[in-house]
Amino acid sequence: MLVNLKEILKIAQAEKNAVGMFNATGFDSLQAVISAAEELNRPVILAHAEVHNRYNDIDMVGPAMIAVAQKAKVPVCVHLDHGVSEDMVYRALRIGFTSVMIDASALPYERNSELTAAIVKIAHATGVSVEAELGRLVTGEAGSGESVSGKPEDFYTDPAEAAAFSEKTKIDALAVAFGTAHGFYTAQPKLDFSVVKACAESTGLPLVMHGGSGVNEEGFHNAIANGIRKINYYSYMSKAGYLAAKAEIEKNESGYLHDVEYAAMHAMKEDVKAAIKTFSRRG
Image (cartoon, rainbow, N blue to C red; front, side, top):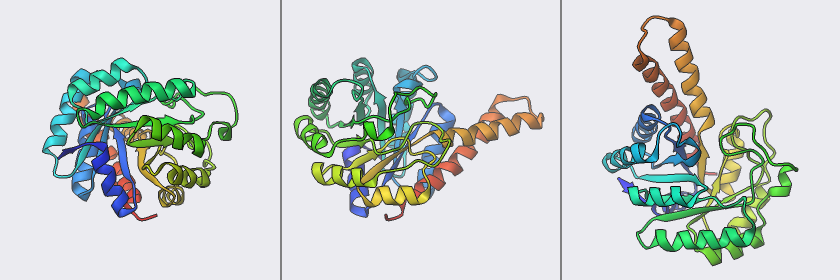
């Protein structure tokens, strides 16, 4: 069942838990995410990130994502993750995505709020939800090692600024920075849950955790207890698929790519199931 982000976050808010967002970088990960959600009978957010467009163009994978969501036995939101260009946001809207993230967090506050408000006006006119971001993670969204200089706390979301931003833009969800990072962690992150709580109270919005891969179970539950309702998770799902594919190749029995993809799909499915179970528990 295809729904928008606002609808799916109402479920998370009512249950006081979080819905997982998982990137579909190919048909193997697309199948893994939907199969996991249906098996557990849990809602899910299926996402295409602009940074992944080089692997599967949104014009090709997007319609497939929507078709799968429409046929799914559980609520599925089809979401554009980290839309940093207006062109990509508009492409997602034309294809039929039910949620878009306009990520202008690298821009000055005023420009971020102006651009976000403009996107919200267009998206809301067709029933599409909008997520935005204030504050910044210290690693690039691809988890490639790209980083911004400074301490993590220098980029935490300011609760007062978040309240003003949310009021001006009318967004449906806000991604906040409180110590997480994109990609693989070299050490357990130090998370400031007081930032999450203060932003939840000041905005009244469902909040989003980016860089969810690598956070431990206690960290997830504390974040949820303080107002996180959407958790972005990709890197460790992808790693599970990579390791399964590597093992399949090293067996050197088949020679067929589809056997490698099939092994990767099943490994990713199990990883997604574990994440959904963690996010679905009450904080």
